[in-house]
Image 1: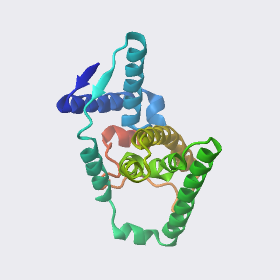
Image 2: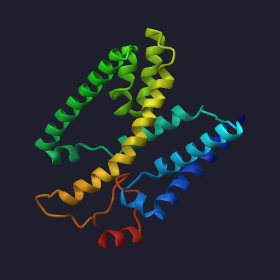
Image 3: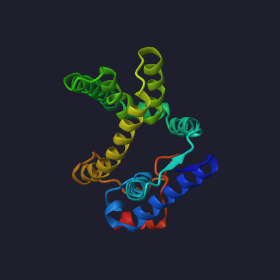
Length: 218
């Protein structure tokens, strides 16, 4: 087993992200369907580590001490992009969207608990496989798993939460790009198709450059 300390883990994560960026910009399929760079690089590295473990018995153990602080920092930066003016500009449509989202969250939990009960599993596993992780992500899953362990004795809650959140993240990244591309291509807006020339704010569109504007114009 190879153990990577905190610094080595950060370096490995950075290299994985750079690998994903290189893949997305090099493979037209990935760029066309807007596959996220962390998903592209992470899947490739995960498959490589799996092959090494199965074929040669090599296993890499990463230091996870910075996982929670980095996740908190990540979600905090996302929150910096929120503002009341954008919500007000959305008007009635935003309210309808909120109601639909809440309904889908309830549906996620109902399906998760129902499937867990049908399979003879702990209903708590159904909750972890529902909106807690699929909508909340790794940070919410980690927070709730501690509660399930301490109050309900669900000893494997953390592993289940991380697995479900990772599955949701990867699948959402793979499905979200093609679906968004289809909707943009086949949907109409009151003002027609936007030119996409607005200056991006905060983290709305971080990957912007001259090449991307030329590609968008094509």
